[in-house]
Length: 420
Image 1: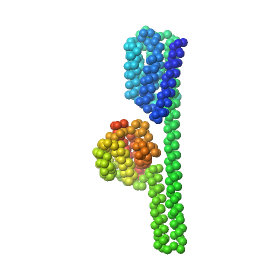
Image 2: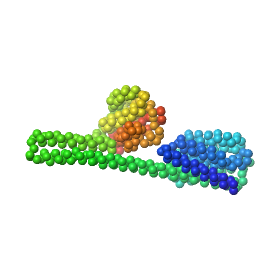
Image 3: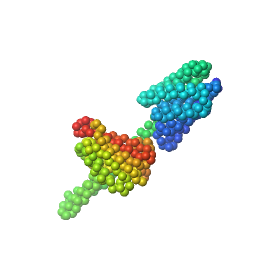
Image 4: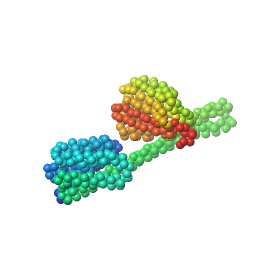
């Protein structure tokens, strides 16, 4: 009975730690599956489980460390899962190097290898199947434990094994369900945040339409005056000149909005990346010199794709300018292009301040900027829209104080050929 109370208390404490971990994540505004933080949660859970062990004999410890170890190997990347196993063995060694220590190495080692092999398959499952799958793994691990202990004549009583199997399997199922519940809520919250940002863009559209009405009202008034015969020809010419100026202003407002909302391609042409990137780099070169940034280029003369040059140039200028801004103390900006089968690849790499994975994930969203009050995020929003409009994709890799790499890929097939 005492063992049951101890196992229930252990499981309850693991759930409390998970709850506190989630609160911490929310307060920091970090992604729910931030690998570094999740790793520490599982490691702390293993330590807590070992501290609450039931000592059966000189060699055997009875605890729930298998629960965070299983879930850690399933939810963390493979490298972190393997590291979690190694750390758990090191921590177990602090409690004594005996038969139980070597038994843990063997059983949890086999378990970890199996979990890392099926890691990708686990993430293709739906929530209920993930819970069921983790419970089955826990039961199989416990059965392996029973078999090994029997071989070495270290077996426990039937009631002890029954309690162990039930507590570990139930604990694994509850913990897995808690993780899935939190991840689902996080994803839902992210959708709500994005919808709010889209609503903000809608408000922007409404304000711009209000601005457009002002020149249109002026144009309407001047056209009415022009139709009046009481005015001289010189006066009417002046009215026409003012009306044309107002038309140009309205057109500029609309064009500016369309650039932010959805970049449109004026024409499709074969863009020789080597030539156009060289021209664009020459445009941005003065800014690079002023910022003590050296531009190194490696451009394939055969790389090309079909798109609109003016919008493509605007897109590249935005990326180059952001890369230069990310190197306030100077640095090196690498620009590379090549043709990979039927894909034109452009790489823009800086040695600047870098970004967190969360910041990199949010690039291209309305009003998100890593420049604080100095940036609006609309420049990259436009660039991402331009890339999508030309059927391209963009990949971002970044590390704090190591720099950022943008990889832009375009299909070389002309959109006019109807391939899309």
